[in-house]
Length: 297
Image (cartoon, rainbow, N blue to C red; front, side, top):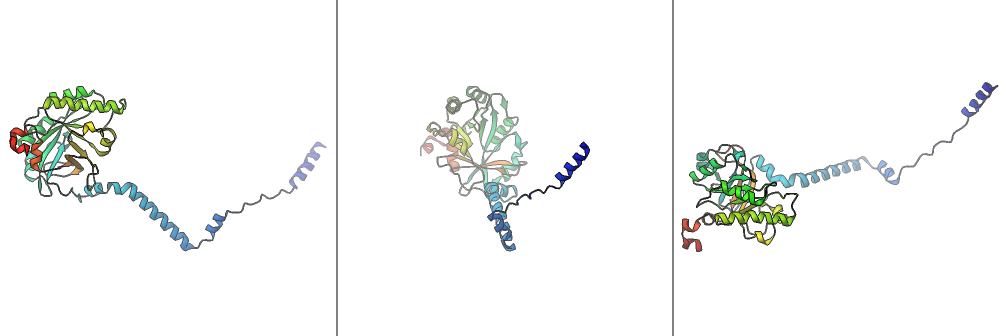
């Protein structure tokens, strides 16, 4: 009996009718899409692709258009400047200074000055500094020596390290502080005071105001205090037709993709904002080199 009942119960269950699940009607938007003609689909696809191409070009290609042209040999140099120079370090390897002197030029204007990496932090000296610094003077370039500001050493120790290794002479450009990063452990105010300490320590030793090298946005963020306006400014601003910074500046590093005879690979190219006479007036001992009267004109 239990088995028969079980079978009867199963039959009744299997014969029970279930209500169908109601189907949801598509939304009005979906129904409209379903009735669009084929030409509308093609037009929509073309517009989406065009929007994607514009977005990619505007945000990823356009800002670096000058760089792409430089990479493929169609580099354009800043117009209206005649005094050109380079900055170098061990990354340029061994330089053929004779070749650079005789054939190095930008738009038919010769290379006039060379900025050379000297020190970094409080312990590192560029391995090619002494040779580059000597050769630059031997081959008649106006030379300068820069210090890369380190994150792990005090400004005082870094200034002392630079002074101990860099012997500037009459005819050399003022010392240069390359500052591109702020230590995370320092407040903006402490960082400003540290940079000023390096500048003032070095100025007291060489008797001339150092040059500040940095890039546009970094200066506006951390070095915009009026106390820095008394120092010559060397701005790094790549792949633009003109400098966007509105204040006074002396040097402009406009590309890191320069090519010159005597240097293997790329080299940074710079211009001086003035005449060659103005550049020479900026050097150490300029009063003695070009005369007191000429200097005061």
